[in-house]
Amino acid sequence: MSINAVQFQAGLSMSEFFASYGTQAKCYRALYKWRWSQGFRCPSCAGRARSRFKRGATIYYQCSACRHQTSLMAGTMFEGTKLPLRTWMLC
Image (cartoon, rainbow, N blue to C red; front, top):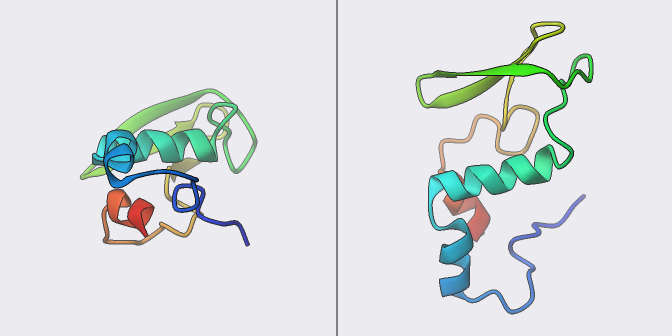
């Protein structure tokens, strides 16, 4: 089981935390970078080309090759959560 990389950063003060993860958008970008560090990869076919669209408050990615749709939080511990990402990053 992996550890929460945000929680166990040495010397991360509350002000530094809010500077790095203070908004939902900053948390979203950090999670994108952790999940797809080499860029987007389709979980179905490993394709790189994708389109992006928003439905409600959720941003979805659709693979251009196989048309599989996924979101940033699908398949992670954040899937189905109603808490904001900032709350998760703080825990």
